[in-house]
Structure formats: structure tokens, C-alpha cells
Length: 222
Ligand code: 5RP
Image (cartoon, rainbow, N blue to C red):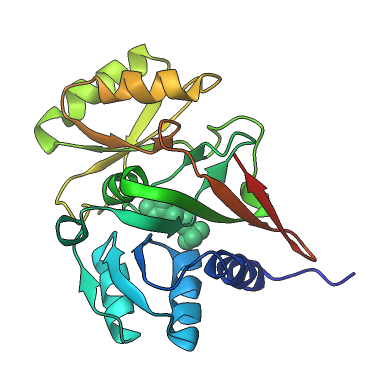
């Protein structure tokens, strides 16, 4: 059996996710290297989409370069489908996202979509979320008060070096948090004043996961 390269796996997941797009969709597009493959597939097939919404400046640029006109979520009011990658995914299709720093706009898009399709390589599948750490976008003024609260919650926060999000905020990456109940931890983190968004997607998990394994892509629905 031949083993798929990292890049081939991402492309395979992107092709599988593309099959879910419908003629005339309002489509939300996530951020990251797997999404870059999705944009390549979109550019090759040029489906008719009523509008495309980007979750980062990088995705916006890639979509424009691929020939798509990009709308805002305020203009579309909602999304039929949202397609994005992930850093971790568990069997309930809950996710850790934000490795690429676009977690806030990604969570907004996921919450606004009728259907959220998540693309991943099998290596990102975990039984319990957390080994990747939890990215948290914070208001700079609250960075150290939030870090102290995170330590009380059992976490080990570090400031992501040389990074400000597209919204102009720093990111704390937190390891060591107990994520057995990911939804409870997502809500607890959201309750800390100054947290913009945390990278746990338990309240808005994926509806469909397309997971690229060595020799095929497996689809799971929630
Ligand atoms: C960006 C994200 C990405 O979806 C996540 O980091 C996965 O990226 P990649 O497709 O490059 O592996 O959450 O904020």
C-alpha cells in the first residue's frame, strides 16, 4: 500500500469536501493549508456560488487570486455551507482550531452556517482534545490577567511569538487544560473578561468530517 503524503492527504480531503458544495451556495471558506487546497479545487471547477465569505485576509487574497468575488458575512446574513480545516478533531466532531490564528472569524462562520464541513488528515483525529493546546485570542490589556486565570484552571499559557490576529489581538496558546468536557471548558474560557475567542469548537462542532486516511477519505456525520 502506498502512503499518501501530507499534501496529498490535504488535497484528498479538500476534493471530498468540495463534493458537498451546491449550486448557488453562500459558501464560507476557512483558513490554512488544507483550505489552500480547497481554493485550488474551487478555482479548477468554478462552481456557481451566490457569494463566498473569507475568514482571514490570507483566504480573502487567495480567493480573489482564484477569480472569486468575496462578500462579507454582513452582506450574506448567513452561510449555507462552511468548509475549514482543523488542528484536532474528536469522535463527536468537536475541534481545536486556531493554529493559523483565524479562530475568531472561523468560529463566527461556523456558527452562521447551516452545515459545517471539516477537512482533516487522519493524524488530527484524537480521542480527547487538548494535546495541540488551546489557542485563545485575547484583548492585549487583559493578557496577563487571563494568563493568571488560565494557570488557576490548570493551564500553561504561552504568548504566541510575533503574532497578532487579523483583528489586531495577541494569542495565548494554552497546554494542560482538562478537556474531557470540552463544551464546559469552552464556556469557562469564554467567561474570562478579555477573551475574544477560544479555539475549542464544541458549541459549534463540525456537522460532517472528511478525514483523509492513507488510502481513502472517510466521511463521518454528527
Ligand atoms: C486556522 C485553523 C486551521 O484550520 C488549522 O490550523 C489547520 O490548518 P492546516 O489546514 O494548515 O493544517 O484553525 O486558524
